[in-house]
Length: 80
Image (cartoon, rainbow, N blue to C red; front, side, top):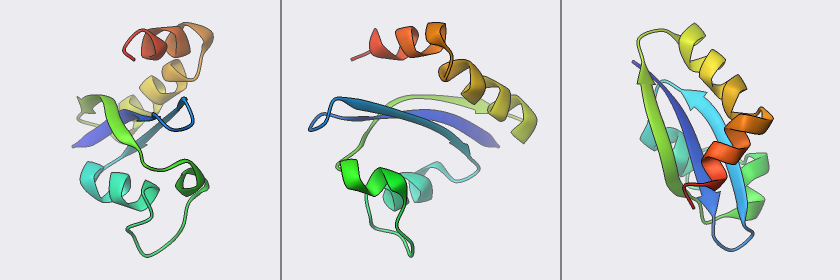
């Protein structure tokens, strides 16, 4: 299974979207709990705002692209 997700930083009012095959591990990495640091670590703590599950990575990546469009950002902002 693959996941497309959106994280929200209450502290910085930022939404981050991505896709992964291990959601909890990826959230931990964004929050600086993993083995490596990410761009998103600067804006922690992150909380899960939205998630969708897909059977293929290609579908998850397509949805991630939608989240990064104007309509997708508007949709994610409506969830805050």
